[in-house]
Image (cartoon, rainbow, N blue to C red; front, top):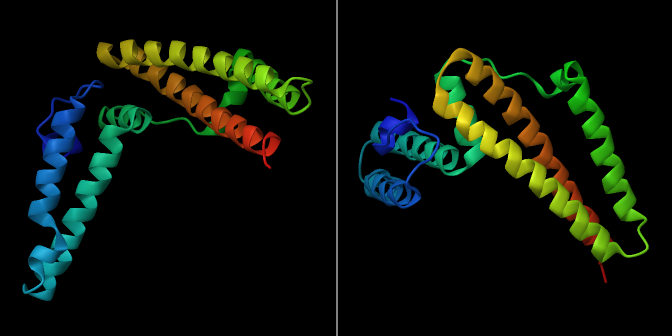
Length: 175
């Protein structure tokens, strides 16, 4: 049973988060290991395994990039590894520019403005790629799936950059 079936959801990128949460709570309650405290050790183990699967499914479906990757995996799409960015020279150049942008933030005369500008730039590009990913996932054909996997890889890069920007902010404003 796939995660969508487990939660009674259609296999779409956009999910009803309230329904997802409600079903998660109901499933967790029914499979919680404490309910099996007096059961056999095999039943207890099975409850722990099911509870773990429910948690994994929930974390996957509630997190947009994990959900996108899961959808692509269900469709049989091989996900490119992060080293394959070298093949996309335009994106490789953009990666270098963005890394320089983060480095510039560290040495900016006005770190607040530099952080804000960098965050805005990263967020804008992330949102643009994210919108394209949603369209591609809705198309459900081989070309769109391959394009979606490329966009997903790029979105993961932007996510890492945002984490790095957050670290830079913490370092700049440590007291």
